[in-house]
Length: 459
Image 1 (tube, one colour):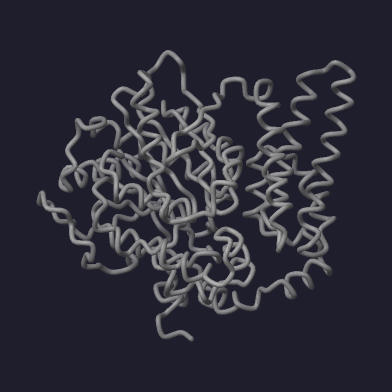
Image 2 (cartoon, helix red, strand yellow):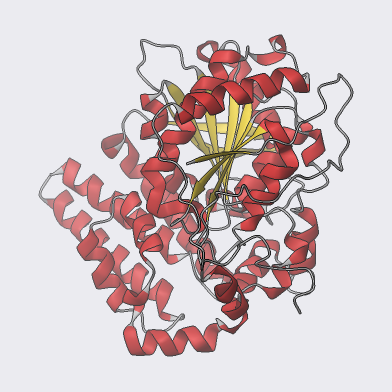
């Protein structure tokens, strides 16, 4: 379902002012979740004690379907997911339960190796890597366990990859004085890719997870580069995660320019959650980028981050490495309001009405601030990162990127005038609307308006 943020951008050659006038925050037909305001008012109560009590009574099987969908997208069997979740009776159990499952897979790997069954052994090692990745998603006050799990994920995946995903290529992206690890997936080798799609991590994702999202992009003749941003995955040691890492695009563009398969270089950044904010910051400061896709991003976290769940705040503290300043630094660093006026390329914004990590209105506000450059794709039943709609949103993003690439040139060849980007955004919006997406469900009369889930005056 596609909503057009129709506020006009300045079509002149001058850079658009950073403070753009904002139209209505939500299109009148945008479907909302009636319980969203209440969910956000209760978020502060979801602390470790509350969650531990729930887990003690019901185990990890109380986990929402959106997160189960995330694990299934990794390729983990449903029965393994459920069996592991049954072992989780407190937040402290989370990493240990998944590490035990990973070790069971490693036991299977050794048995298959003894039987000289290399494909089965590689699959077991691959599954162990994914379990270590899931183990680090929630670890409290134990940076060593996070580092070990992330290192195990990267190592085991790299050892299994030649057997389970032989077409992937391991590449290193230049970044400042070092490099960032990444995996590159290419479409049919007989065709030149229409563009290079770069998947940027959120707080807990890693390239070993995001590369599994590549299929819809590859089917649309788009190459996919899954990269570990500084502070995430294999690049944890290059952190902490920081809004100032908006120069990641430099190395990606350098890589694309040196590879004849990407001539001219057409690079699109796709980010989820904080990665979505990072993608937009890169787009604001680097006019060489073709487009950006941002999934359930924050927009003005200074308005709401201090009222978010304590569990989320704990995770953000780990990302920044400084408990005293984590909330303030992330809220100000990832505030996108000051940078939207500098964006000069089409942007696809994807939001979910049932997001309880980032207020759903953040996607609406971002699209409104970007005006005609933005296309808002809205999922009334979607949660944070839209994991339960992963096949749908990746397919929509692939179609949208293909349309933008069809209109725009490559590298320095295209114009960075805002009016040209507006035309490309309009064309791409019409293209994906024509794919047959259903119209948005109108609010029922008794549904609450979602625009002010986190009103400024709310204490």
